[in-house]
Length: 364
Image (cartoon, rainbow, N blue to C red; front, side, top):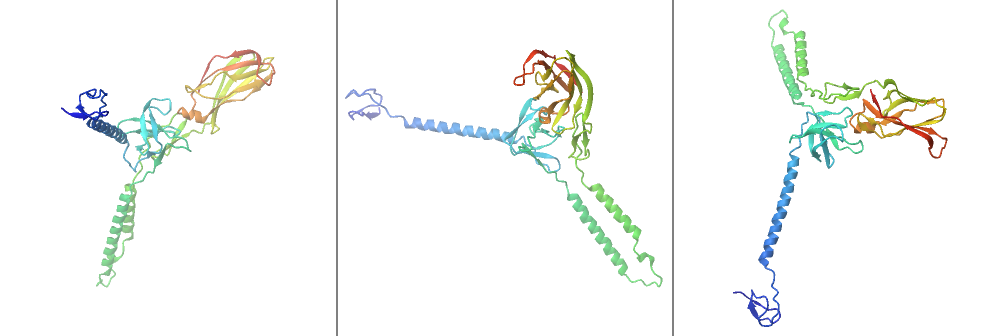
């Protein structure tokens, strides 16, 4: 039986006692050092396990990167991470992420070259967003051709030429004992020319070629430099698409869609012609944001017309908003208007009557 000393009277008592048998003081037992050591060791083991698990998962992320291949177009991620999307727009399904320092081979690009199609080594195939010009998310790595064959060809050609020259010099250095001139000692010009042409043809055939273009262009774009990996899609020269469709005709107000104007590099204009044939002033405004190719696009539109006047003020859609949704070619527009009888108050827009048009669907 182990003995301990009472703190109050310093007499020895059993370590199992709760109170001192001499003075009756309550026994305060010291913590078991071995128990504390076990707890500390357990905490250290748990901490090491967590660190190893974090490193393992980080290492697993690295395995998704492609190997560097200088013969094809590749990109290197230069931001913390980029989302991988199923389609070339930010509303598409999220498939995974790529991380800073990783390298990926480009399979395809969207027409505006803002979304790049990649496939990771662990099987994720989708689009990553390039970012803005001032804040890119990845950088393109240069494509370097294989020059080894061409260098070797040059060495072989020089060696062959040197051998031919040596043979010619040896032949011409031999003495000719015949009194008549020997025609065989004359250099054969035609033969030398043919040899040079054959050598040049061999060089041309063995020059490395860049991989073929893998890009396909959306409607309204055409493929440029199709035989090169650096091919790209360029908007067709057509800048105006005529429509000439009356979309509203009521209470003296006629709204006509004339077409789409792509001539400006910063926006696309829905060309409208509005006439007020009524006896009161009218204000025509957008009732809500229109839908372009199925996505709502922020824009402003408001014109005020006195009786018997017209307007050719168009509704504009900024290219940066269109590109954000994956395309700058407009195929469908859905919009509606509010038509207000204006009472002439310039400080606030008041009217005696407001009419809201139904949703109007347009296709191009």
